[in-house]
Amino acid sequence: MSVFSVFARLVEQLADLLQPLCHASSAAAAIVLFTALVRLLVHPLSRAAARGRRARAALQPRIAELRKKHAKDPQRLQQAVLELHAEERVSPLSGCLPGLLQLPAFFLLYHLFSSSTIGGEANGLLSHRLFAAPLGGRWSDALDGGGAFGPAGLVYLGLFVLVAAIATFNCLRTRRTMAADPVAVGAGDGEQVPGLGAVGKAMPFLSFFTLVTVAAVPLAAALYVVTSTAWSAVERAALYR
Image 1 (cartoon, rainbow, N blue to C red):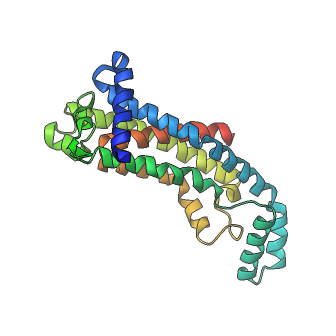
Image 2: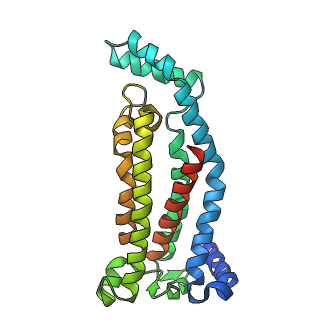
Image 3: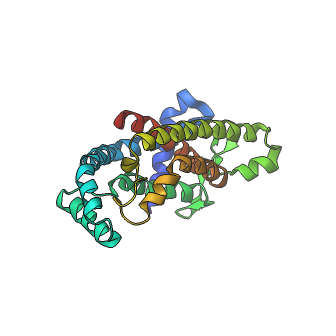
């Protein structure tokens, strides 16, 4: 039995458990619950990333001294900073790990709700819906079926509004954090690995790309993205307050 068959059965069983409460949207609720379970498993790494950020902040006085010492030699400065991180066992990339470990779950959902068959049998998950929108459908299908304000289109409109609200919250919060401590979010110069500073400067706006993802992937995968993004917003507000 393939991993896709096992996961499809798990989603079906969760949907059966939630059916008395969620009725026709029980599979969608199961995906939200599955996402929450994934985020709970990853949460210790998120806490470790928060500790890593505080540790990097504590190194800033020493990094400032290295900047003065190697002001005329950027390559030596970069090497010295990386050596300092290694000496103190602080990874500049520790914050990336929680996000990377979620990718398999996302692609698993994407595959399940993009395939007409699972394990050689018809994919019964495709019959499930979130209100009027099929979990295996995309925004383009909703537009073709009834337009942006049709029954399925309104489901996507609600998701877009939710994602835009979360992205705005993340953008404002990240900009405030960068203004208070640009190094902690990777916006400083000289203290991080090459290229990370540019990523840090773009960070306030990255959440808005979630809108593109929600529009392009199957609705089931979009639910995973929306739930995980909302979780991240709350988690970061708690860990980085």
